[in-house]
Structure formats: structure tokens, C-alpha cells
Image (cartoon, rainbow, N blue to C red; front, side, top):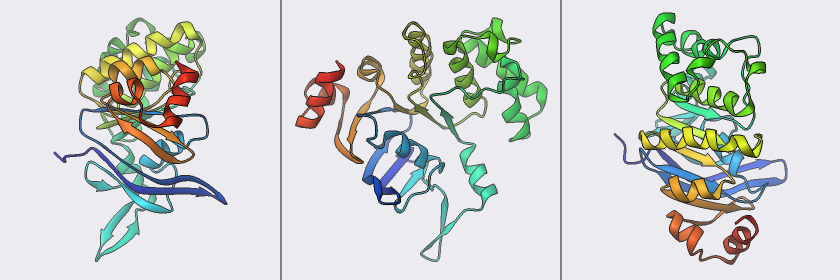
Amino acid sequence: MNEFMVEAEHVHKTYGENHVLRGISMQVRPGEVSCLLGPSGSGKSTFLRCINRLETIEGGKILVDGELVGFRERNGKLQELTASELAAQRRDIGMVFQRFNLFPHLTALENIVCSPVMVKGERKDVATAHARELLDQVGLSEKAHAYPSELSGGQQQRIAIARALAMRPKLMLFDEPTSALDPELVGEVLEVMQQLAASGMTMIVVTHEIGFAREVADTVTFMDEGVVVEQGAPDEVLGHPREARTRDFLSKVL
């Protein structure tokens, strides 16, 4: 096992003249939960999308479990992976978005089963048995045959988490998974994420849920304007922030 599940070194990302990421570096060990905090537009979600190559980068490098993301190194030079190679690399990285993106014409069970069968070639009976285990894990075994339109937002997001887990990833990325939910539904999704963290899953979570970060995270990274302002244990960053920008942000959200 590699010392770090995720290593980002001096990552830069631009959109035209907009320099969104300005040399982001961070490391996440296997089994750790890392929470990214910061105001809207600070680059948190963009950085998360760079980890599984949904966004390309213009500088630096990202490694997941010791492998370069999006590239291979040959004779001292970097070569971009082909689309099929990149797809294979992404299979090990689960991602949960703000919006649930469930297939509306498939039941909860079918939404979970389809990716391992179609992408990984799993036998349908094996994938279905695993999907039922995952439904039980997220507390929705009784909703196996419900369609997304019959589920609450919190239930749909829990199905989305189960769908990502169906691919048996080594890393889970969460992009503000509770931001689209009504306040009373946030807790049920955070509870599933807490259980997942307790099971030893490596997780990087972009969130505004300070309580979750304080309780569950091993490390907290505060970002602003495309840079890492402060990084450390939750008690340090949230309880005793060193930087004035961090203190100002927390004073507005706590």
C-alpha cells in the first residue's frame, strides 16, 4: 500500500484568464477523511474534479494510490492516457455530486446495479446481491424497487452514494453532497457518510457542514481564491485558526 492515497503537487487550473487553482498541494493517507472548506468560487469543487480527471490541469500533478492521474510517465516524459485507459482509472474513484443524477427510468436497485455490470462486466446476480447489501448499508433496503421520483432528496442522495460504492472504489469524492437538500434531510446523508468514514474508506469531502468536518475529518483544508490558506487537524483549523482569512470565514458560518 502506498503511503498516500492522494498526492497533489502544485496543481494549477485555468479557464481562459481565470486562474482557478494556483498551486494546490495536499496529501491524504489511506483511510483518512479530508474536508475542503472555503467560500464559493475558491476552487474546492474544481480541485475535486481534477482528482478524477473530470477537469484537466495546466500544471503540477496528481497521484491516486501512487498512479499519475490522466498520464503515464515514459522515458522521463508524460503521455496522456487514452479515453479507455482514463475510464479504467476512474473506476477506482467514486464521486458523489451536489445533484443526485440518478437515472429516472430505473429503480433504486437498478441504478446501483447498472454500473458494475456495464462498466466492470460483473455478473448481474453478483452485482444485484452487492447492491442489496449497499441499500441496507444506506438504510434504504425497503426502497429497492422505488423510482427516483418516489424518493425524497435525502433518499436519492443515499442511493447515489450506494451507486458510487457499487464500483468498489478505493477513494470517494463528495462535492457538497448535502447542499441541494432541505435542511431536515441533511442529517440522514451525513450519517451514511460518517458510517462510511468509520469503515475506513478514504474520503475527500467538499462541504459547508462545519460540524461534520469537526467530528469526522482527519484533516481540514481551508481554500480561498485558488490557494490553500490553512491546513491541519480540525481542532487546529476550526478551533484555533492561524490565518485571519480563515477566522473571518468561520465567523460567518459558525
